[in-house]
Length: 102
Image (cartoon, rainbow, N blue to C red):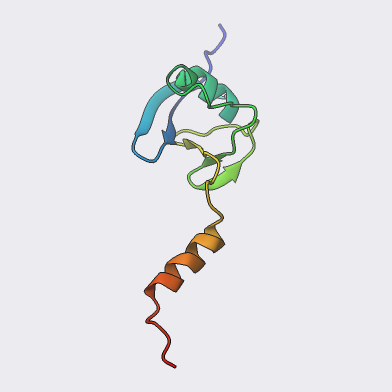
């Protein structure tokens, strides 16, 4: 009698500026990040998501698309940055400074 593969409970998340989606999935042990994204069907709702090219992570840490998932993992699909974080921080700091006296 062969044992069926162990099932894992994972989440796939994707966020836009004004919309976030979290999908809970049951997958077989041995499922990769890319496979979970494909299985989630997130591309039907967000066609711009390309599992082969989108940067991904697990709980905020970058991960490879071929990384194996563990029970309870949260797969995060990152979208490209629209501004350099250093430039944005510099701009905010400049706006907060009081005007210079002469």
